[in-house]
Length: 309
Image (cartoon, rainbow, N blue to C red; front, side, top):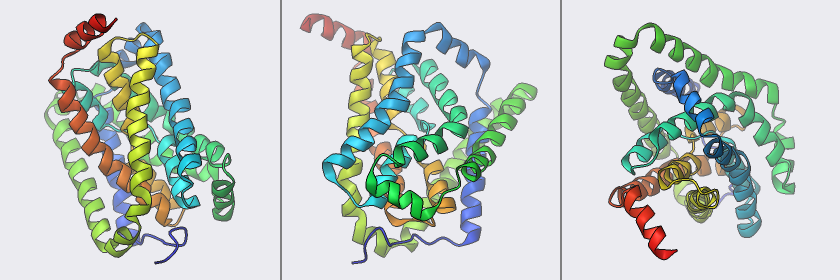
């Protein structure tokens, strides 16, 4: 079995272009629903907003480094964990928060802000946290990633579609209401199809190395959901806010992660497998958690906590 640090996931240039276009389309359709009121709600709830910032930009990378220290995976797998931590919240987090009777308005605000901030924050976080571990630092230097080119790519894939989507949503609200969700569903379906086809074409690599990334992703994802919720509890946030925070932290935009892996790291096996498997696994875990919470509305959860106290 080949060393996972030497494995490359192969996609032809046309497929990579399609991946970039699909993610840009997803960002455009997400931006159709962004309203300035989403950010106003964050300003109205400063404590929840501050806790969300801590969870996104301190808790996630700290978790990644802790799991790397504990399990000592190959450098490319470790760098994949750091990449996932540097990505913004995934858009499915809003739906899962709604399903779980969480604070959907808070979830939408955090997703919108973290996605916009990712234009600059994701490349900076990847560069900074990737340098904290000797193995990942050496890998970053061997690849010689140009941070400015990465910022430019993120601007093209996220920033431009977001700006166009916000403008279109404000300019043509009726069209947005009619076609926005349909476009978003179609784009997500194409992205899922892309991942499935890519996995099938590289099945031997996935079969040989999935065991290497399975446990590290399982542990990292479980800790992300759990510790984000506990962080919200320690900050005395309402139960609905804690649920939103858990989904915003655990559900990552791994589509962006995959684009960065293929555009800058040549499809590096460990990184690609971590991003692809995290994107799959957190849907499974997030959906199960959302349905469990749905049967336990926040009012009942609050009453339960009062009884325990």
